[in-house]
Image 1 (cartoon, rainbow, N blue to C red):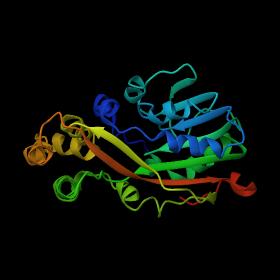
Image 2: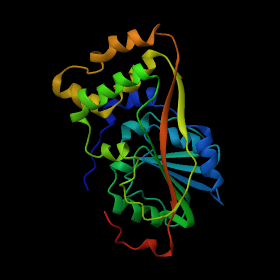
Image 3: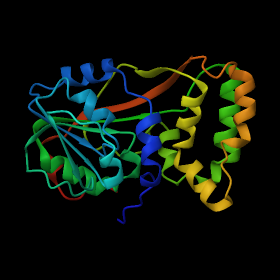
Image 4: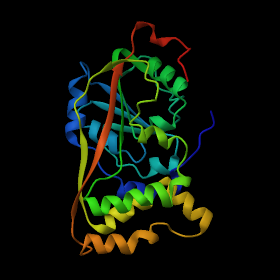
Length: 258
């Protein structure tokens, strides 16, 4: 499967304006792992999940197919960043206690990735995939963002985005799945920070490339009217989708459904 890079061109915005995952999420995931020697943050982007995991695991290997994204990642002494595909990580066999995939599983070749995850995980190791839904602020602002998402930039979303909308329900998950509690991201942001987040959307980048117009400008004034003073911070929530599981004994077979 050919790798399509949706994020390198906006890697600077991505590192500045993507929301941080809650510490409660990483604390919970770590609690499921009997051994916390080595975790793999797959498709790390700018390292947000790797940073969260670094508090709970002795070492982290964080990989991403985009060298630009890796270049913007935050460094920590126990994180090793590498450029690499999710389906071909180059990680030693049966060396990983925990695999994290944050806001990225929907981009993968599922069969190839699960084969790779089964190869690198130790027996009994866990895999977690997390994604987040549209932001929630208040009814008026949410209505503007919903229109922006579904009407203005909708045709510029890659097809794989539908998996996020479907809360990963239709992504194959050939693992023994664990029932998990609900989590959400919460941030207090100014209007400029929120607009920067919108600017990091891949659909916004593709819209601007094709039409030579920034689509965020189409809603900037309306959002400003609803937001109030630019330096006013508003609480923003993103509900999380979380799927966690472990491979069963027969799961190292090379015939996972794609």
